[in-house]
Length: 630
Image: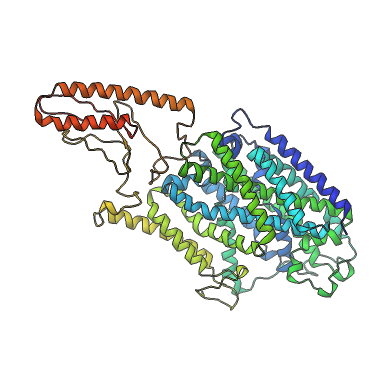
């Protein structure tokens, strides 16, 4: 039977969140249609809102439900998520927040493309995208199951409705809507769950939760030390390279504030987990035979029912009006995770894939429309997976492993040790890290291991193979970068073999003055040329041609507005006229037939400039037979 009171509570809560999201969208400034306004809220997130939205990076539906489940199933000692994610925020602030914010990056992928080029950055987008989408799908699936327990409505309806609301306000408000709704949602989570706890503790079916009477602390056997260490490292360092985190870091007003927000949010993660810990302990101390729970024949609860301990405590151990408050908390937690993940994935696609790879000269208006479409598509993908894929948690676990194994080592290198890595090392690290992780298998996806590490017990790997894969990935990016640099710079491999053009076969930004001055030898490795004109250094940045990442993609790419394009066109016309005049003077002053090939060559270059294939300037000073060519 459908619970009318629960339906009313959900509708009121969703309308409130929708109202706040739309109101926040109106806070966008005059540059409301710019990348920074939509993706990073104009880098103008205040301290109060910043603390809440940074905390909401990990405090979501899966976080609070999973914490209660782990306390009920294995005990507090195995509940590593609150402490692991808190430490990930601390290390993220120490290692990355300051440097990333100082560089003015827009997304997490910008430093990768700065170091390895646009196409390699696009490859690294794949695990980042999958992680964000699968995380959203997992939280939506958890929400649907929770609502179906408490309100007794169809799971599909609750999932689709929640996703539509989150997509709607994210679509129009960007990070402004995400950040301000995070404030409301965290209040709902904190107070909704805390209100439920006194009623649950005083229920007649619940005995004392003292650890001496009910073992909700758990134990850690020595044979599981390796696995325990592996999960801890995964949470701490695998929790850093996520766009959902860096969009909060990069939206801060300053680098120092980004660090402060990370440290304060770490405390917030632990505090927000406390009610879930107590709810898990309450579930452990409950005699479910004394409740209205229908599955009395399954006491103690089986694994499937154990995953739902949080909504079951709200449903069977608290009054109806209290359970609705808890339901609002779970719904809030889910949407606070889903909206930021959808925005993060869409931001990376619009900027790092569409703009920097396919359309480097796209206008801001075009990028904003691409981002809106991406938000809708990403949200639709997450919703579809939540409704149809039964192994969604397995997919998310695997993708989070890949984020840890592939993205973290390379992010560490490009931020702190950029001179010691190149694109060859990135490719090798990507492949080796992926294969090393897959070799351990994934039980939730029925993926069989093809390497049985020490401690294999027939069902799972007890060896910390994820951390091993991460270290192999880190060593690979360093070793292959150093190896390729040695082979090319020592001449053991010809420059033509540097097909990624990141060691010796690097496209020149300028044509340097020839040593003898007798020949003009522009380096045209990429099919384009940029030559110094007087004192001005004319550079052409093109994402489809630039391979070695010399240009910071977080900086303005230029020619995004009609005014800039007009200025560049006027400058090009002036350069062409000046060049033609200089070539004419040089041609009239040279009588020797031996100089005619040089004049023809210059004339051909002038024609190439006129056609838009290059920008060049030649200063010809005829002193006898000697010319100086720039």
